Length: 305
Image 1 (cartoon, rainbow, N blue to C red):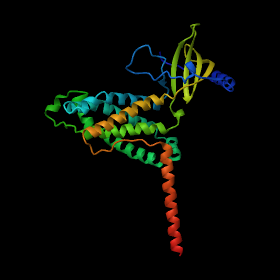
Image 2: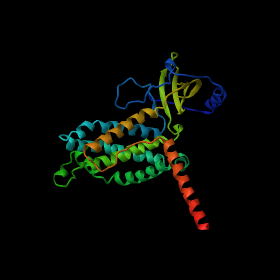
Image 3: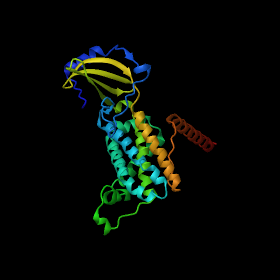
Image 4: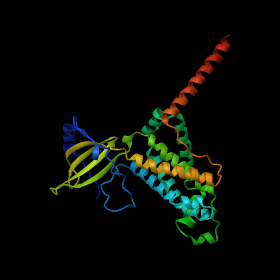
């Protein structure tokens, strides 16, 4: 069922009156609420899972989905006997991954996004994000992967018999994969409230109202009572919930692990991907800055002598 949540003037007044001082509850069994994210090709009847509530969240979830599709061919790539054909098959999910990442970057390219990166991201993350974003933009439509995708992977084009279609080498596959998953991972540095979620609980026993939950800022989940058209009629309890982005992050980290295995399997010259906690990055940057300042001070003192 499609979630509907319509706030009119009456609903805003209701929220203003009822939300302050509302009790906060844990989820079932005293744990955080964890309904999971909707699986686009998963089982039916799972309509009560989180769905993306805005465009940037949709692109993030689709990025995780593309990572899963890439990993479907991991074992075939690792096997030398099936590597050649697996690289052709990887062209489709890799192009999907680049497209989704490019669209996510476009959603995160406004003035406020720039300010967040400048004010709260470690310098190394900012530099990496900027460098890879430029590279993905150039590589997205011009890479051999895109050409193979159009001629031999997503389609079997007869023109491939008379036009030279490039044979992919492992780095043609690994380069866009590595850049894309790093950009997805860095997107997690944005505040949680930039990614919002909504899920339909169901029609209530009276048959005239529905329950819908939203998460606009981790960890608070709000239950809304609406009419069948989605207009808010009441506010339910606040519940502590896990951040759905953690599920996407798990998919990204699995894709990073797969990328590292692929790099190692073919002895690629491309770098492996590793993560460093933000606090450690900031500490290292601060120590480097302090060292530079001390060196500058000593040089100045030497000149004065």
